[in-house]
Image 1: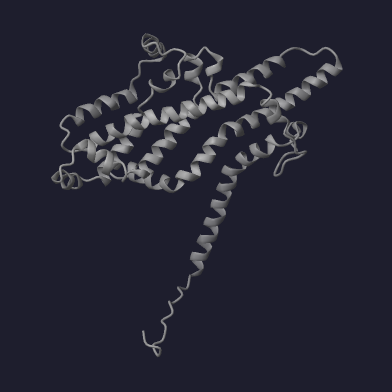
Image 2: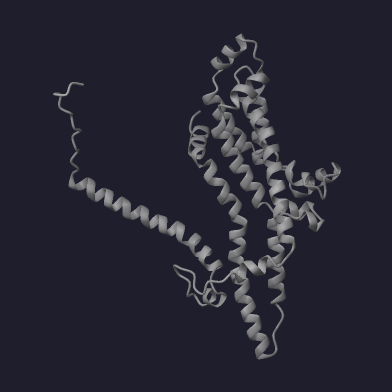
Length: 309
C-alpha cells in the first residue's frame, strides 16, 4: 500500500430502535433464565458453608451466614470417605476405558458402508434400548459369571450405551469418509490400522464427549454397587455418602424426653441439613474439575454426532 493511499475505515451499521428494544428484552429474559438456573446451585454452595441454624432459619440468601465447615467436618469424620473416594475414581477410570474400548470400535464398524451386516447389528442394538431383562435376570447373569462383589460387576453389565454408540457412529459417518480409507488402503493400510492411526486421532471431539457421558454415569452410580457389592471396603463414594446420611437421619428418629435432649436433637437436625449440601458439593467436585478440560470439544462433538445424518 502506498503512503498516500487512504485507509478505508469500515462503516458502522446503524441499528434501528426496534433492534435495540429487541436486544434489551432478550438480554433481560436470558438474564432471568440464568438466575433461575444458577441460583439454586449457588444456594447449595453457600448453604454448605453456612451456620446450620441460619440455613434452617431461612437466613441464607446470597452469601454464607456464619461461615463454618461443620458440614464438611461431620462428613469427613467417617474414615471410609477417603477410601470410597479412591474406589469411585478407580471404578470411573476403568469403566470409561472399557466403555471407550467397546463403543468406539463398534461405532466405527457400523459407520462403514462396506460392512454388509450393519443394519441387522444396528437393529439388534436398538432393540435393547426398548427392552431389558430386568434386575433379577441381570443379577443372575452377574452371579453366574462370578462377578459379585467385584468392581467388574459395576463396569461390564453396562459397558456399552446404545445411545452413545449411535452418536459416535454418526460422527464417524460424517467426518471419516470412505475416500479417506481408500486413499490409505492404496498404501497398504488395513481397517484396524486405519482406525487406530487415522480415525481415532481425528475423533478427539467425540472421544471427549464419550468420556464425559460415561464418566458422569460411573461417578454418580450407586444402585449397581448397592445390588452387587457386599464388602464395605469396595463401596463407591455415592453409596458411602448415602449410608452416612441415612444413618444420621435414623439416629434422629428417636423421641427426645428432656428439653436438653430436644435442643440437641434440633441442632443435629440442622447439622444434617447442612451435611446434605456438603455431600452434594463433595460428589460434584470431580465432574466440575473434569468439565473445563473438555468444554471446547463438547459443543462440537454433540452437534456433529446428533444433528448430521
